Length: 422
Image (cartoon, rainbow, N blue to C red; front, side, top):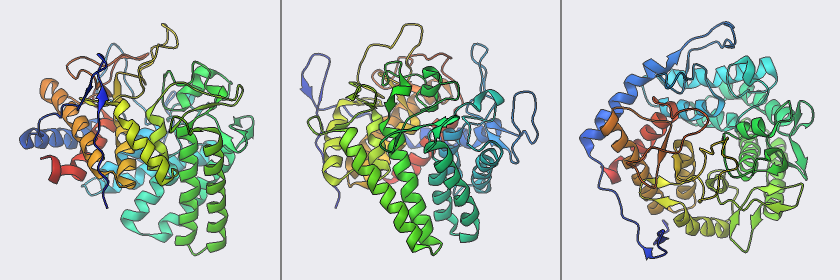
């Protein structure tokens, strides 16, 4: 049964007011945006079958995040976690075969480097990105149902899990605290370890990413362990499935002990060097819903706390907090909103029965994206969710247009909520 949640939020004046809902989405504008996205895949698609200067060759064409240079900057490579969201959006379209090709591109990099690097650039091989490979493989299996396709690929994904994310020495010194892992970088640099988290940059780690066991990373590793258990059952290996399930439950208990704050009713990144939680509230906590790691009671707390992040144009990445340093803008923080965090949070809430709340957040995010598209004719890398008429806070590079994962998440949410929001 769906759970309803009446949400209030404090404005900057401290008054408790029901948040204003954006107007209903205009169907004609949505259709124009979906047409833009379909056409944009051709502009974002590129091929690099052999190494070319710093680009690493992969066997199939891939999708870059952006399509236009901004202030001399543009992405011409594929990225690990961007690829996950892009591949999912291709399922059920004329480009469906390319979703499977994107998985094989990631596996090609894994076989060559013993890891999936941040992207197919030589200078990006010092670190990885959020481990979504097993999730992608199971999502593709669910669409196609081929055990023969899944079996060899899930074995490779286990190598990534064991050698990279559970590594305890160079070049993969990530498993550092009672089985919990951190983000890492081969040169042991905090800034680049923070880049591995995907949140480049954020206020979450106070400039000390190597000292933290992050909630999102460990929720993703719980998801890996759960995926491997499920894959083992699919492939007729019940004893192996039980072993993976035990690892997942062990991680859940350790996360509850060190990353869950029962007084606040929320997950926080844990500084294993000091034994203290980060004091930054962030959407990273909601990975615990998407992965299925949270208990029903924890999910209820997380659903209640969503009001802290909810703004007119979607979910703020963090609550307001001073930047780590003026020379390092924290674009993964308030007031910015990001497509992947919205998809994971929305689907996490829906997974635990908070469908009405999930649909409302989807409404806010889609409206924000759509207004930007109506005004500019483009989709962007990130958005200001507090004031949708104002540009988002910049990062170390300008806000990109195109944009791979924003297009992908918009398309998926339109498909999921077309009947309720149009």
